Image 1 (cartoon, rainbow, N blue to C red):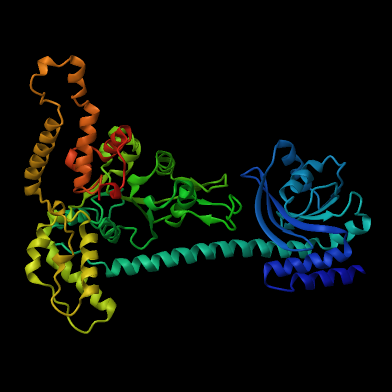
Image 2 (spheres, one colour; image 1 turned 90 degrees about the horizontal axis):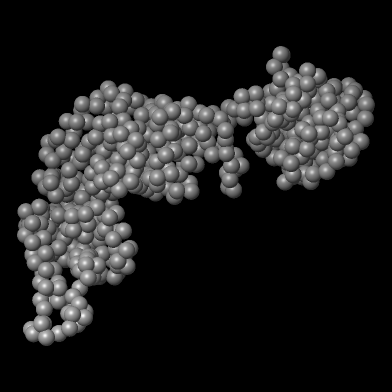
Length: 549
């Protein structure tokens, strides 16, 4: 093909399609008729990372968007610098430049089998800036000749323009993807913040909301403490509402719901190809929240390893994606929440003290529902109205007023979430006549402990346990014990481990296997739940509610 025809036809194929993969496939199909090829690729030298970055590979079968990093040593970098002083390079496996070809071949071995091949590389430029190295991968060792060098030199300008457009398109596409993600997050959070009403503002949450008001216009870290179901996320939303970052990204993460193996990729993001299934580059939660706020719910569930990695980000304000080596600066305000007793966890070593002090700058404690019972009627009314709206009921739901006393006496171990569930359960079964919510409470009276009743219950429980231990032979020796041998007397005594085992099993039986939380065995025994679990393991006491049902 004549030079003019070659140049014109190549330009037509370059502009053949706006879709990147189709355009590059058309370029390959045209070049493969003029050159003995098995593939074409574009790679760039990244000076900051001291590496070669592969952008794409096209073979006779397919187009591959690689976005792959190949580390370079000093010798490799010196060769690349030499290349960029030229416009066209041709080398074979015996060339001194073959070390680059060998690394390139290993990087694309999944798509093109490694072997002795010739390379023909044209350096693409835009003005004084190097765009990239456009490589033609030959079929054999000596497949390229002077004619091929000449034709590729003609293709240098249109290929440079095509690659500049391709790289700009990739960048715009990535930024658009990130923008769409942030827009969706903001839309959802703005809607949430607009519709969220805090019940108890003038009741049991009065003191808590006064503390939230003190955070207006401030960006300090906040740690929200409270039992499960007390509404920690609602308070976090309120903190965000009064924050100077209220118009910025607001990203929420449930630390307890993320497996340890996925924690880094969720929080810090990952590069394409970092692991199986990483088909694209994905920014992590910290990057998504850049300039705004990150809400770390259930932060007490983080493993010790995850705590170390989180602490590093909070100290240095940078993240590194999984599979990447570039540090990315992030500016994020942290709101954390947990239902775990962090101060107790500091003592047993399950939570890092340096991370705790980073998070515990402004602690906000939420009272459990049993301590704000004046809010129960209003909460019930609100949940009933929500249910009626969702189910599109035309009539107003009536609640049996005589059941309120029993509802207020209940200890509510699940707090507001449990109350909402009971309201929905009762209304699902009956939403016409006055609804008796109290009949849907647990039947076991042990769940109805109030603070006033708890002391009497514990004294009664301890008395029962003591009598049982005494009946077992700890202090009550049989008559005529002096006539028995010392060995026989010892066999009637219980060891300390046996006493502990019996006592813990009886408490678990009463709690139906529940270990932590209000009404749990750990609370009754007055010890940390983790300590109780370790003691149960040592004494070989089984876990699980079924064992004690």
